[in-house]
Image 1 (cartoon, rainbow, N blue to C red):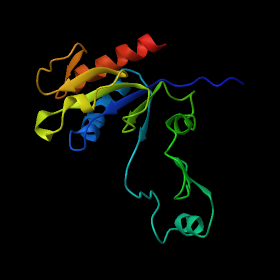
Image 2 (tube, rainbow, N blue to C red):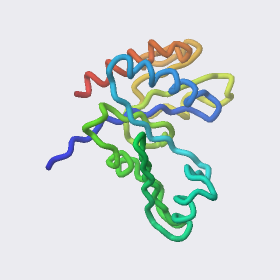
Image 3 (spheres, one colour):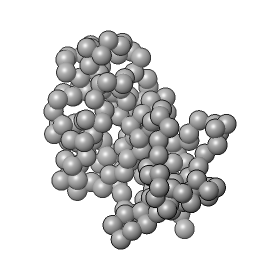
Image 4 (cartoon, one colour):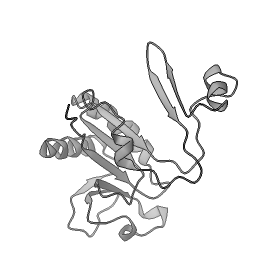
Length: 173
């Protein structure tokens, strides 16, 4: 069976710009527009979605390389990755999603990946815009007018950003 690949759209920005805050507003708007959204979020922290003391945590810590925890409402697959493993492979991670239950995958982080991206920029963060821009950036969302040939979005207008994402998604079909 040939599995369709889902379009990936990155949301890239410096830390402190508000990527997660914006996505928390945009994702419900995309759902209202009948888009089913997956999300890959890169973190530089040692994260754990399980809790010490829970059976699944204890079994995973006992040495299971993969642990799937399931309930009637949701399931989660946790995969251990050794410390010496290469950088995360975004396309491999995206391939873990069910392409029949989603329309697109938003990607927070992974700023150096060769995927279409919307760059979020706030001058008050104190870092240069050109550090975010590469040939894969399709638009810039900011709280000020930017000197660029790229389409400009208002970072404080989630409706406008959701509309732009829907338009981009429709063109990617």
